[in-house]
Amino acid sequence: MQTLPPWPYPQLVAHRGAGTLAPENTLSAMRVGASFGYKMVEFDAKLSRDQVAILLHDTDLERTTNGSGNAADHPYGALAKLDAGLWFSSKYSGEPIPTLEAVARYTVAHNIACNIEIKPTPGLEALTGTAIARQALNDWRAASVPPLLSSFSLTALESAQRDAPSLPRGWITAKLDEDWRQTLTRLGCVSIHLQHLLLTKSLLNDIHTAGFRVAAWTVNDPDRAAELLQWGVDSVITDALDLIHAA
Ligand code: G3P
Ligand code: MG
Image (cartoon, rainbow, N blue to C red; front, side, top):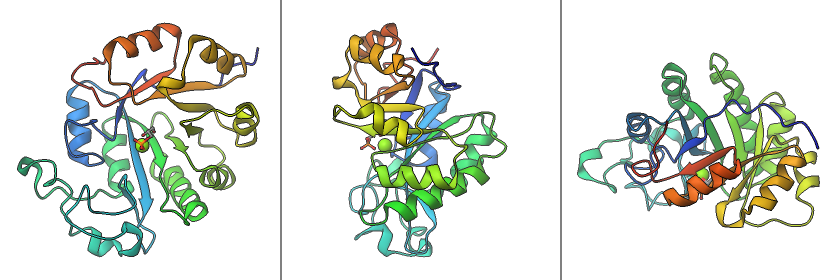
């Protein structure tokens, strides 16, 4: 039985700021998350053409902004003019795509813990891992708990490990191969972030015994969240802030 690494994070994490209750990956969403008592937020970060780190889930701009094309093909100056709230509701029109820097200022000031998902534009995995990890190291230096960096991309995690080794890392996956222990060990991860339907009590125990923390996503059924927490999952990442109540 390995010793588990420190996990200074809350059990409940607001997915993309406030799940589906506000325009995802915006500061307004984070304010909604905080209004529901959530003390930790997960969000998706990638780079503009001129390598400014911004929050955006998709590679392209269509679904969540009034822009078009890939975010990585536009300089930040152009992305800053887009509306990232109107697609959700007229109540949020004028909401900008936030920079990672702005999110750091907001979350550090309000003592909200962060899970920064490094979500590279395909082909930019190493560059994005390096840029976001280095920036996180600087922008969260006054934070009471370090930001948890996570990614589906092993390349991005390798870059983060090399360039900001002191920041904790989590590997996100929706499938578990036999060699998951080796992958987590090689990347120096503290945690695995598993699609919650993969999780059984026995697997959770195996991961803990191997010395890694477990975050489950995206858990929107309160009964499933209660079950996972009762089993001892370390964090639950959820959209259902209105149904799954922060203590
Ligand atoms: O970080 C967990 C979860 O956010 C991964 O999926 O697509 O919502 O970023 P996605
Ligand atoms: Mg995400």
